[in-house]
Length: 288
Image (cartoon, rainbow, N blue to C red; front, side, top):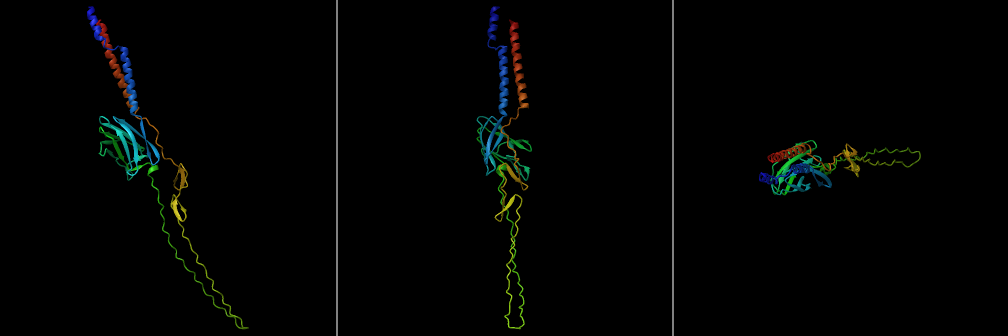
C-alpha cells in the first residue's frame, strides 16, 4: 500500500500547485491588458511645408518607421517593415491635413505598395477624418498614398492680382473762340488794340482703378493685402483670427470594447485552468 501511495505521489510531482496556477493566470491577464493597450496608441509626425501634423495609425504584424510628404504629387510616402507574414495598417487622416476629393465630393485614395496596388478599404468616414485599412504582404518596404490636397497651410496657392483693363480717355483739345478785333474810331490816330488769344491747357483725367476683395491699390496696381499679422487671416475684407484646427498631439483609440473582451477572455481562461487543476488535486487527495 505504501508503495502505491509513493507511486501516485511521484506521478503528481510535475503538476504545479493551486497557488502557482493563480499566479500564472494573473500574469496572463496582465499580459493581455498590456498587449491590448500597446496596439491602440501609436502616432507619427509628418512635416508639410514647414507645418508638423500628427497621424494616428495601428500596425498589426509590422512597424511604421517613417513618413514624409511629396508636395509635387500630393502624396504621403511611408517606410515600413513587414518581416515574416502578411500585416495590416490602419491609418487615419484628418481632412484639414490630407484628403482626396473631386468636384467637392469624396474620391478614393490611390495606394501603391512597392509599386503595386494592394487590397484596402475605407473603414470610417466622417466630416473631420477618413480611416484606411491596408493589407500588406510580407517583405513590404514602402507605401505611397496619393490624394488631392494637403492642409490649408500647404495647399493655398498665391493669388495673382487681376489687372483690370484701363480705358484710355481721349484728350480733347479745347476750342478757343477768336474774339473780334475792336477798332476804335479815329478821333485821333490811336493804335489798334488786339486782344491776344488765351490757350487753355487740356485737363487730363486719370481713370479710377477699383481693386477686388483682399487686394489694395499700390503704385497704380492691385496687389494682395498682406496687412494681417501672425495668427490672423484676411476674410471678407477684414483680418480675423485663424481658426484652422490643430491636429491633436496624441490620441488613444480602441480601449473600449476590445479591452473588456480581453479582460473577460483572460479571466475565463484563468478560471477554467484553475478549476481543472483543483479537480486533479482533489482526485489525488481522494485516492490517498
